[in-house]
Image (tube, rainbow, N blue to C red; front, side, top):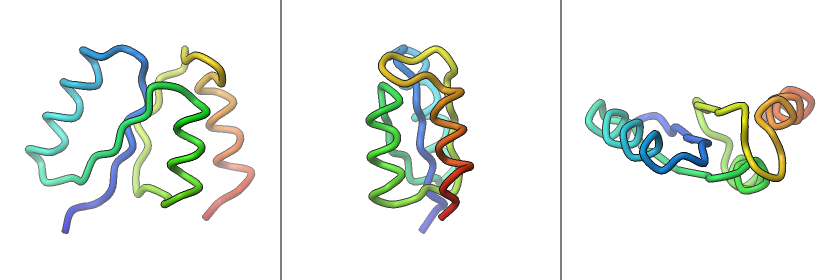
Length: 73
């Protein structure tokens, strides 16, 4: 089974492109459209890699990154 990747972006075209490429490379992909959803998915099951946009609704990418670093899994 491939590594788990979380794509966090609110632009559907970016998500579709990244998701397609990552799945073709053998990764398991989960998607979040905002920072709060990303934090929920990370708490549920920490991914091996997070591809994180900075400009996100509700909770920006900088804050998501800070929270991930403050609570390493």
